[in-house]
Amino acid sequence: MDRLQKYLARAGIASRRGAERLILDGRVAVNGKSVTILGTKIDPDQDEVTVDGKTIALVDTLYYLLMNKPSGFITTADDERGRKTVLDLVTTIKARLYPIGRLDANTEGLLLLTNDGDLAYKLTHPRFGVPKMYRVILHGRITEDVIRKWRDGVELEDGFTSKSQVELRYAREDLSEIEVTIHEGKNRQIRRMAKATGYHIYHLERIRYAFLTLEGVKKGDYRHLSESEVQRLKELVG
Image (cartoon, rainbow, N blue to C red; front, side):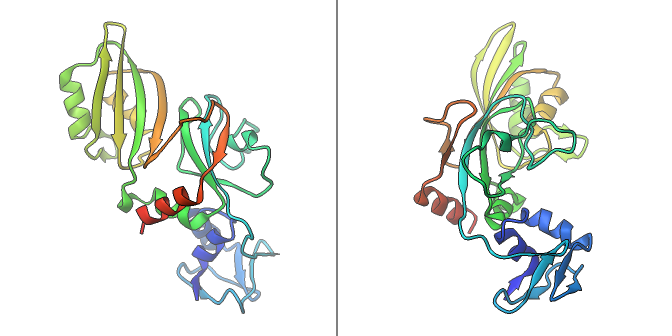
């Protein structure tokens, strides 16, 4: 027996959170009856699941991609305003893929994409605290006091950030570079931390996700994760 939202995620319909929204919105039916209760159990071998009237089946092939996202692309599966999305860069795979987490349009760097909704859900769940490292270039000279605040937690409008690892690369009068590792995923967190401590970001790039790096992947390109890399990610989130 599978939970309905987990089954939809495994079928590549949406991330687990996205599947939950589909259920709550009344768009999912089991054996012809609408289901709006999260946690409903189904038998994949016996029950027919539909979304908006279309029968859903588990995908035959799971894809796991590591992309070096360029600036100017939004991190979403589609955009009603017609803006360029990261999926416009994936030209060789016909499966419906979903980004794991988000990078805003002006942020570059490492982004994972998959049609394995269950793994995507776990990797973005706060309780696992998957580390993400960013290269941050700020306008102006960063002070030791601000670095200490970033390490201890910065107060934002939705609460304090968790502790971060911060390494100073250089501090000049015009620009400063730091490497920041966070273990949570507040919306636009790094940019908001900078603003809250009186700095504007000149360049922001994610350079590591868990143990994965951008080595060998040019800007705008992507590669498939190896079986061992996928297994390590799954072990990381239990």
